[in-house]
Image 1: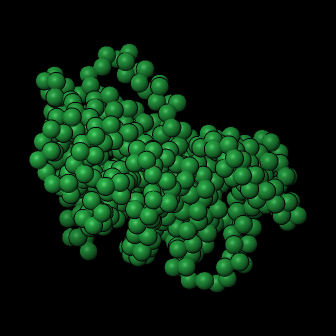
Image 2 (image 1 turned 30 degrees about the horizontal axis):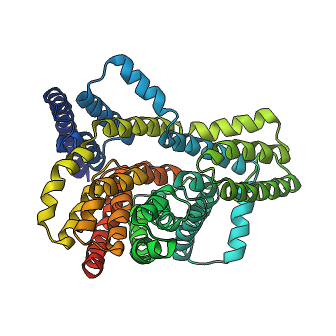
Image 3 (image 1 turned 120 degrees about the vertical axis):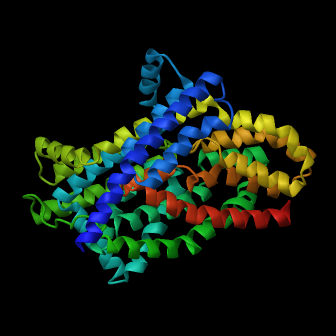
Length: 467
């Protein structure tokens, strides 16, 4: 036993200098790339490749993000004032707002716990589903994530509403944080693929000039089915692995903080009604992630007040919950800046433009496959932008090559949705991880690849028959 522990310690000590050397060499290479003007080529993707490697290697996610951001700046080589402007402008970006929503959701979750609402909601859900198996609850979490994201058309805003309810349920049934995060990813992204109001989905329908039914039939429907048929057993497998590592949520504290039973029931009623009103208004207004930024603190204040909390006590509870995940805000802020820098470098557009002339020599099937994978290598998370970019660069060529409408739908949806599962870290993946209060991006990436590879095979087969 002691020999095994010592070997593990030696391995960690040995890996740290190697990791440091890789980081130093990579950043140095990025400086050279910037100096030589090679940013608008494949070499412009080095920061995101480095990010993926460091995350799989096991480096802390916030530190890995910071290193990738430094590498991206090393290529762009802006003056210090420009760096400050980019960091400042990233605060208003959607990706950073998702980080803020994760923090606000954790604050609401603590108020729900302290007022007894979380326990009441979980008890009510358990009463509805009965003493079902752990597998049934995992499938229920996937379906719930899919449904709410399908309705709202946004992963961050929808999970911010659903997570405070689903996490206590996962805790009660002994579902690990890793399994919960992947249930959010597989179920949520399946719902996002079908969401009629999601911007990237609308972009695919406009670019391919098709209606929603054709979009679902050839593009989103197969991905939705695969996400559950394959994703569910993967989540069960991850649950078994993570359970061996004791990767559980902290036990629920079912005792409210000096709240009477009557006040707790009233607070629960107000929270449920407020949540319902929020969902209805979000559907009506299509406000996206802007709605939870207002709704989450408001729900926390209303719930705490009806639960007989003094305003100062509600604030303390909210701060306590939000403070426990403040690192997520820093993470998403750096991610937003990183993706903006990658967009500024423009490696995908340059690669696609330089490579487009050679595509005419390929068969229609190979043309479609190559374009789909070029889109997959775009800036992670910029789904709607990738659809527009791919269609603008290759759309006319696709028509000349005789690519069918069904095949073009598949190309666009794989190019825009495939990057959710990999090969690089992306906002949707990190959002699901953050909302589940999980912090091991390594396993999120590996699990994403477990669905990305079968999805690539599935769409390649479908393309063969419809191209």
